[in-house]
Length: 167
Image (cartoon, rainbow, N blue to C red; front, side, top):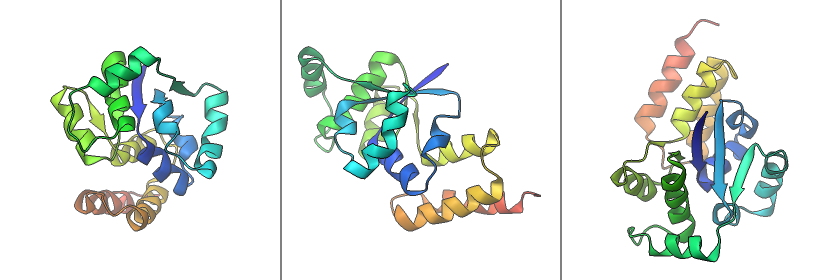
């Protein structure tokens, strides 16, 4: 099974769209770090709790030695400790990174890690038949309203593509 380490922004967007459950239905083993979980507010954490409890979301609690390795990871200053923990864990697991954070994406690519984002997740969810193309188009439109950092052209292309599919 493919492994992925997920950043906070993916969880946050999926929670806002009421699509979090779908992340755990695309045949990818999802990991994150305690540092990422600590970035979430109480309501967001509440949404993740059932997935943590059922071990669909594997949260890594780094030891002092591992945390020091994260701190020592040569990375741009733009990366916070939590972001660096995602990169570090992905390197340890040889896992895909799921993020929408530009500096983290760029850094992970320099480390030859596969990096995917929310648009890729939407594609996977539609491909698996977990939502209809029309529903995906509607959710993508909602996402554009809550996340201004998305590549708009790519999002609009998907929306048009999904709306054009026969029902």
